[in-house]
Length: 534
Image 1 (cartoon, helix red, strand yellow):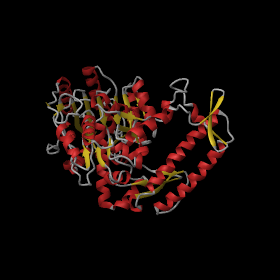
Image 2 (spheres, rainbow, N blue to C red):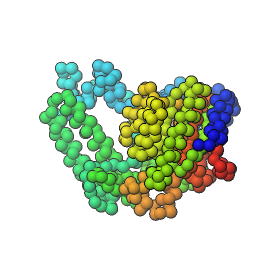
Image 3 (cartoon, rainbow, N blue to C red):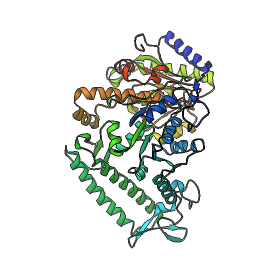
Image 4 (cartoon, one colour):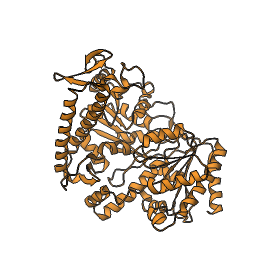
């Protein structure tokens, strides 16, 4: 490892730590703006949203985007639906209610709102419902009552939101599981964290059997038939089963089947050329593969839309709305080598990972000593090779590390936050997670999708090689950019991201004109190629 590169990184970290951020302000242009002063750029962003039927608000975490789009909503006087990917974000948006001077209502799932639970950790009693004589019931203590409860908070709030929204007397904030309630009524739709939200709506629906067909509509019809049969079986079982443990399991299965069927019904609205199908293992998959504008137009055909995303798409022609604020955060490109699976493992350059771990430990220790803050996510690109090897090297160096298990991000993120760890070797945590508690994070490997995945071959077949290559590169770069915006929640939060993979360099240069301004502002280019960040 070059000692000069290490010293340059130390210097950047130190300079960022002692810096002060003064965000320039201006007088709010709109009376409904929730603060007495506005950050520079907010007024123009609000105007741009109001003047556009389709817009992208390209702002990172902590740039005040919620104040911007809520002001645009109130000024527009349109029935506004805000769609967010997580419950916590519903609450964050609704917290603006007093400042905005209008009701902002959100809806959690039934179990979270239940007033019949013995404790917050217990499931709602109605999650153990059963059928009898064509009606649904559940046990409330020793009493059998009809489902849902006459005083169910979920049902009451759902009807309140529907009524107020119908009369344009509230802004509704719903997640990707319940926005369907207002889908047809919305006049202005704001999709926050658009990358994550739209992925959750359009990601693949699957069935655990193989069905060989290149026609996605045929596959969807087959899936719907199989799922309807499964729903009938589960419903029949709920007519004869009375054990609490079995009832809860069956209700969970039924809920998943019903959600899967609803997604299939939405997919069936799509033109077949915007669907892909593939088989992975013993499962058959179908998903929507389309650009974000088309997806939103299929969901909300007549509404005004604003998508909020730190990485706007590159191919729809809509100019993103961007404003740049100073942040006490930097993204340092300090390449140690090509970290691809081919170069590190197939070509036998595993010493690059030893070099990377040594670099990570030294810069982490420097940052911890400087800030007094601990914990660093390490975005590994894959778990079975890079993640496992780096984890083993951390352990060999006497460091407390946690290795994520594939598909269990939520469980392991919570364990990392609560546990006594220095490093978290993880993948696919660039969407939906905030690392504001961490002073530093690392991009060990650019998160390229696995070319051996049958899904990638289906995408290649649909796009053709040239467009696939562009999609493939931008998909990896946009995920990396998303990760880099996650460890600074406000302009004055200290947050460092270090990119160690030299593959970032050519990706950056390829897509330089498409990269958001905020990312360019934060990037410190310490590679030998001084032209990279021009």
